[in-house]
Image 1 (cartoon, helix red, strand yellow):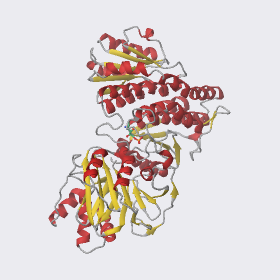
Image 2: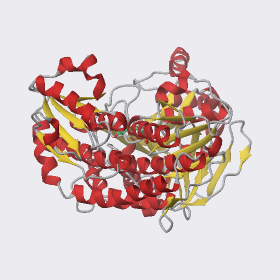
Image 3: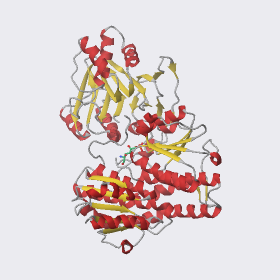
Image 4: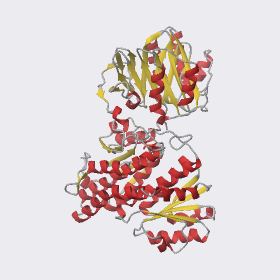
Length: 606
Ligand code: M6R
């Protein structure tokens, strides 16, 4: 949730630290800071807000040390102020931290009683004082860190430097990812390989409980018990993932427009286009006899999973249990032996999803995950990782990752249906053909930018917006509302269309736009009744549909057409108008589209 970087360099490292932090800003941007070893003592610069504020500070107050750590923060404990910004430090030690130290209150009380003075509201400061306490008692940096790690509870990643030690940095991983980068006479530390991509492609991923002592010559890695361990050095492909906005004003716009291409790539990984069949990887389970699928994810990935439930139940006739990961992990549902547990995550690092995965793994389930980052923890801890080939998604609002997740789920539903005999050759041909037409249909829709922009003007005046959908379009209504609220800050809620009359209809009046996701499928006429209920109360209907608005029989403020296609693929097509509406509304309102307030791209805390 926060981004960590560290460099043991052969020249001043401040500029490279900031550069690496820029690539980690997707993890948080409430504040940023760096600390370096300057002639034997520790110095730091920090600034509230975006990274550019820190850059400004460094222009007037430069740092010249060759050893340094940096941090970009998504606040968990304490307001996003400069005082709470990382690195935190004592005269002896400076620490950057991602994650949560769960027992920091006890540690703070204990250390305060011993005479330590806490200056911030953060949990991280307890780590600083704990290590300092050990060092003041006579321990060396390595021993003091090990003693501190033994006391820390929670999920975290740490980067630590020490006064008087220009050739040493310590890293620790417990629940939050951390990568070591190997350079020539230099060593690096980063929350991910992308942060380190311009410096090196030789990466070692720390494993759970690992901690490492880095010098410019390399790293000694230890496990939780303190035994020296060897972890493989791998060649990262992250440098090829470094991206810019191209000709687009925002990453989100670029990512929306990339969808025809990335959906094509993703589909071609799971479809055999020469035979019109499916080439799904072996999930290590007999799909013909699978009796239940357990599905879990967070946010947009959860809504993709919810579409997957409709597809798998309808086409493969297998019951799917689905829940948001933050609930499932504590609900601890009973798991039947031999079940398939499926997780969906763009980042592959979402803490709640990972915890639920571990619960299901311990419960004997076969684990498959649909992930965009192939080197992520969720991918690595799964029996089978099913990649989405969306490429790096930088905008906080997930767009292309969502439609690529849908693409994999669609193929999975066909694969299970084929194995179970619920999808015959004819139906498979139909479904595969429909999927292969999706990129072309989306290209056509993306040419209608002006139509979306016009409707977004109407939405930008609204205080509340309601999204409705039925059947497989219900998750699209939820996703539409999430997309709009997260980047425009307009209050929006998604409902199952049939639920409207059970409460939400009380909210409808002339000032409330109602976006209705209603492709021309067998449920269209049912949703027409709900639109009439809305119109009768003066609600302004914005219809996303392949059907003509003339069939609605009441006033429709705007119609955002989707191409006529097989109903199976309607979620992929309906995703485009809801993304476009949210994007243009946010642009009109002047919000920070790619880095909306209070959010982060990767949520590695619970
Ligand atoms: O990386 P993940 O797919 O696991 O992330 C899950 C959610 O945090 C994410 O989808 C979030 O809801 C997006 N900001 C929505 O646009």
